[in-house]
Length: 264
Length: 299
Image (cartoon, rainbow over all chains, first blue to last red; front, side):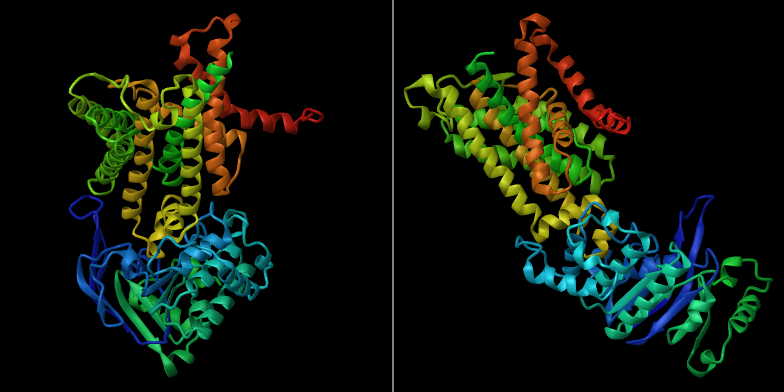
């Protein structure tokens, strides 16, 4: 389904701040898998996701989604294949547009946009039904400005938006990192539900090993722009956070110094 | 102020309402600070005047002016999105280039249109006494059509995509919107409107002049800002309405200031009055908020 083959990406090449982020990253994901990606700061998690989404075009290597070579395809042309939820609740929605306009934008993701009206009665009905499943009371606030919603509400709507159109893969880039623990738990639960209901193939970057082990079928650890750990099935279900930490320390060859990985 | 002077102010206000709608698209909807207007307004005027003087149909002249304006806006956007030149700088480059191009088009610094047919002449006929009524009425009809057309467009799937491009380009791309194309198309639309305003302007003023574009962008921005202060809203059809009203109010205030003899202002004070008006419109929301906070200050 998704096949990334020896991806390389260096930011600011040939300058003193040269930063090789992806160094031969390879990963294959089968259809319907929910994969979590962990790793310390600078491991290349976000860059990898941005490379899949098309915000970043890799220097070398190849990228196939659903059998299609998208290595050089600009991001907007991949939107029919890839749905995304960003870390920053501001980034995934337009705060100056209304809730219904934001949802209408997502409703046409990967489809041709013509001169017909963007909103009509049946679409509003659909959006209202979808929003009602969140149980946040947003179904009565369709014309409200997105900027009036809290971060958690916006992430929840972003998730709904990502599921309005079928996609081959859903990319979640630490989409609960900016939320308080209670809201984060709600958004994670919603994520599980949406991924399950729509049988999505999903890739979730997280800073929390707990989150990584509690859900999904498979956990991948990145370090220095490469996959250093890839566990699934039997082996993974027996693992505890401490096991994961031990493996993490082993691969780094040093003691863990990132508190964020221990918390949550 | 006489009725005829009032109608004259209204006429110019209506023409600049079209400029203001164009500025609204670039500055507010696309978030693209664009000074091309100072070049595309006289470009529209030069193209229309040259075609009309050459015996062509005035409506056709307006259409060609729109295309020329669209090309200039597209070029500014292209310099930005393809060559990576800063938005403001790209528009300044096109603006000064257009000064030469406008001179080339007209072949002279100005082109009189006295006695030539205009889009207004079939409705005026031989009775020149009614020109001061017919011209504002026709312009008002054109502005209503332009405003409603923009409202319909920005409520469409493509129009919503253009608004998302200006509001959050990264999100727009993630939704599959070709943001670069949207900027190119939006800037073309914006400057097409401004060029049509230039084409209408030369037909009401009896000729084109190469320097007629100086300050166009300031007037357009003034109208947008006065409109926002007058009628603050996030709903698009209200915003376009506020912009049109802002342009009309701006011209009326200017006319009042210049016609009130006791103030002693003259035509050369126009830019000073503009600056004062826009400055006032900018601080007005803050003043309002301050008054509202003071107990008993609100009324």
